[in-house]
Image (cartoon, rainbow over all chains, first blue to last red; front, side):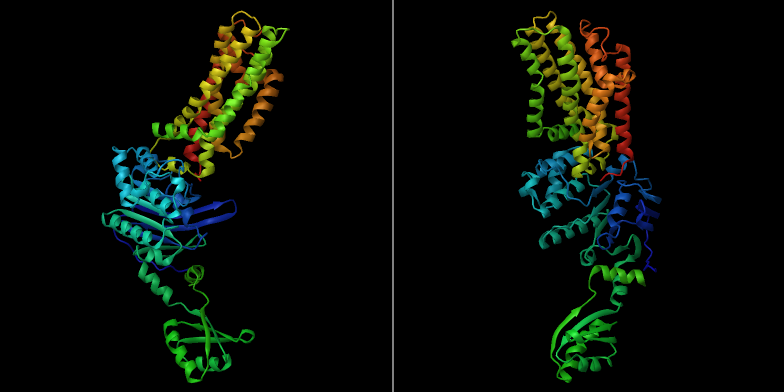
Length: 315
Length: 244
């Protein structure tokens, strides 16, 4: 496996060196190494790739089986003092449902020994734009509201480092934009933010640096655009349905954008492999029109995140 | 620490839990009322065996504490809220102390009041002398028992998701069966420590041949050791566990 690797400047806030984690015979994370620097870094990967396990080790919630993790040059394991500098939003949405949103954030402030817990809570709730619902019990919150109140609790002590595991889960499009703007503002203030997601586009807006994790291994790391270019260069399978598949296949095989064509006779469809989907998209209607073939369907076959990440691992 | 303490108090005050506990704590009044109403009055030895040993020390005390102490951390583990506490700069001993204090704050007054009232009513009803001293001894002895059991069950709730079942097995098999009938094991029994302190506060309780009572020095040392060991194990577990 080769990884896209663009070196990052400045000191590392988090350093992960040859880290593995296994549960019995199951390897969840395998020999992963990277550094996290100030700014926003996206931790990307499909569900079950090992992102949460990695984050749990970085936050000291889980022990590493092998390797070393340093946060602010300290071991995060059994190091409570370190949490005064870190805000962590874990994956599961567990909170104390019987508390109001405000009481939950104030509790978080008191646990982090913030001087004026009420004022700090008010500021944090304001930042996530949840003041209207702050005095209602958390049990009545929607999923998006829960995520926001949990983010407020994560921000309440103004940490230098934010580690957020899938924080946009459950957020509606407007909340998503607000959330992204908030994170960008926090990054501009010089904070270090590590945000995990299984949605490429979600991280694209926020992070210039990304880490791609697939099957517990680091598939790529570095500049988002370099990785995106690598993704755009990959060949795609496209299924094309039409009334005369043989005629269309003969026409398409001569195009530069087409690497191969396979007939699927039972369904009157073609499977086209293309390294330049944009060119194929432009040429397909023209080619069909020239030979009077009627197109009834065009469907990309490997647009899923798993196939995108899988491609990077295979390279 | 106070934030965790008040949070824990609130978590442990579920309506159904408190109703069940009050029902449980009223139970020792049954032998007490029987003692009042019976034409053939029970002797002091009868009450020592039936009320102090069988009802209060073997059942009410451990079950009440089990019900309140195992969820102190157990519910946080089950609900996956424990990370809200461990991902903070709170020292682990303070988390343990706050949870233990919350369980004891609810359990101790309930157990002490139930012990005091049931013993007072029973001994008075039976027409026995020294009812107040007997009631005070029961309240003191079982309050010490609350502290020691709470340390054990707070730890159990943190290490096992089946803490309630394991705790009940421990109460009835280890404390109730082995602690009573295997002579040497009473030195490793919280029930024996509690009864021995009852005996020390009111020397007219229990005769010299009682199977349940050990010397007060051994009981106090045993109680301190068990309390110390399990609070230490809880702190250690908080420091080393993979938090869900």
